[in-house]
Each structure stands twice: as structure tokens, then as C-alpha cells.
Length: 152
Image (cartoon, rainbow, N blue to C red):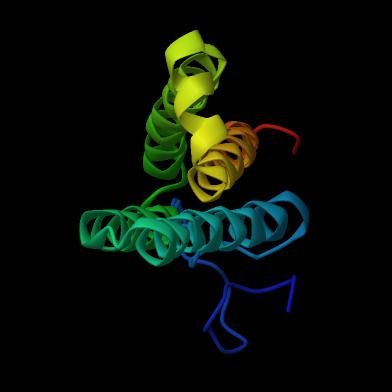
């Protein structure tokens, strides 16, 4: 499997081809692809959590689009996947920072004391945003390295 392009028979790789499906799927490329699936699934799972916890259909729809786009972009171009992953990192890091700050404010502390279910949702959301930011920044590095041909 590693000695020939994905989906190809015994023929040699196409000269000058750069898409991940026209190159041998070895080592770091496989890790980056697995990371794209993991990050994409995590993004979708975060949207499912938003829908279940708060009934947010926009979270469900947007997360599905973003997660599927991440995986699709890997097949189109690892560099496009790196750019999208970086945008996802920036978005989730911002959401984490905003949620963390809101939870720490005295006004929100008072509100959350009166509503333990909302406190749990806010706390869980904060950790989901952190996990997705970390997954996305790692995927950015993996896709960038695969896309630029690093670590050969």
C-alpha cells in the first residue's frame, strides 16, 4: 500500500502529482489524514453537543459543514487543509477565551450558582473549545508539513 498511490493499481505515481490521493500514503500523510478525520469528527461532535445541550441547530449545521470541509480539503490539498485548520484553531481559541472569561465574571458566577445545569454546560463547552483548538493547531502543523513536503 505504501509503495503506490491510493486507489491505483500497480502503475507508478503520476509525475509531478501533488494531491494526497496521487502520492503514496505513508507515514506522516497517513497521520495527517487520520488527524483530519479526528479533528473533523470532533468539530461535528461539538456541534452535536451544542444541539443537545441548548437546542442549537446553527451549531449542528455549522459544525457539520466545518468538519466535513476539513476532511474534504485534505483530499483537495493539504495546504488548503492547513489553512482551514488554522482558521478553526483561531475560532475555537477565541471561543475558549471568551467562555473562560465569561464564566469568571462576577455576574456570571451569580447566575451560574442559581442554575447548576447551565454551569455544567458552560464548563463543558469551555473544555470542548480548548480540545478543538488543540486538535486544530496540531492538524494545521501536520497538513502544512505534508503539503510543503517537509520531513522527507
